[in-house]
Length: 75
Image: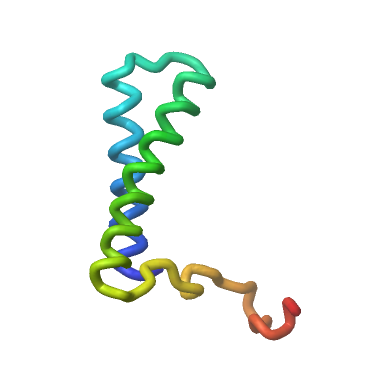
């Protein structure tokens, strides 16, 4: 993963946790809702940065194959 991908993942996790705490989310469905909201915060930030820089944040570098394989073999 690139540095930017790690940062946006951390933003999603932090946003989700803070939203869940603010909403006093208990149980699966309330936490699922907080997760979607937290992910949306990071998505919107990523899209805005991509728009302003003209560069994509998400890369294929975060995909690792088992030893001895290469991406072309997945076809």
